[in-house]
Length: 164
Image (cartoon, rainbow, N blue to C red; front, side, top):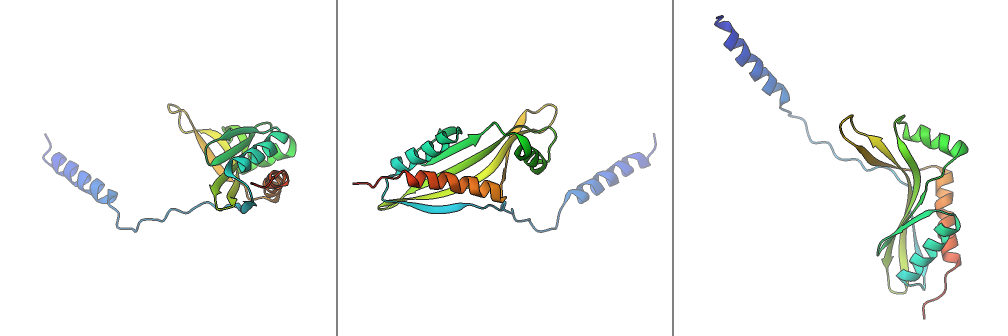
């Protein structure tokens, strides 16, 4: 047997291990830009704010999901030029179940409710042949999305009744 073969294997494994080490600095995780809206619903309880936001989403025929401090409204039936724009924005030919999601986080203050609203596109994207699809989101920054979000908030504040 060749005596240099074990020596070559040892040198290759040393080079392989040396190549795996890194002297670089850790990269900071960058947050995705967003156009969130922060507002207060004056003279309102958190349950009234949730009801008003759900009514606004219901008037636009959106799918509604709620928790104790959050209201999420999803638009599943996207057609026309808006669908083409979202397909280009997602930029994944295998993406499925593309929907526009408006998310409202509520914080109860003294005599009002603080609302932070954001709108994003949510879709399923396959990771590999053996793994199932993964839910991904990307914040929408365009003026159409911002005006849709603003319209939902305006509708919710219009129906406000003062807390007694």
